[in-house]
Length: 118
Image 1: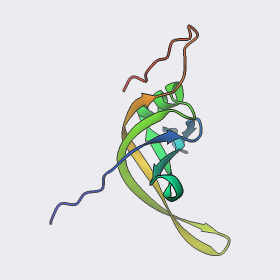
Image 2: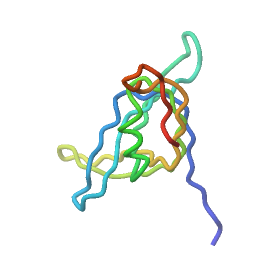
Image 3: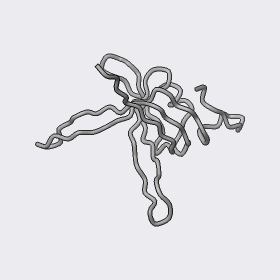
């Protein structure tokens, strides 16, 4: 069988503070929207992506990242199906495996900017 590839790399801005959630089996994960932009001037447009992080990445994101922080996210596309009303829909989320903090984020009590430990 031939190899395949499912990999995505994004650099963008966090649209909402990462939110820590738990699966029914008690596994922690964090979700947040990430916006990327394409084009310039009249041709500029925003693309919104839903990011999901698991384990230590989820914990670090909730602790260190806030709305407006610029980050690099590397991960895979995960498709899912859901029903709304009587119609079936297909959605996509990005499961992030690597997050690199680029700018913005939280400030500790001393007022110094800090970077997430990725």
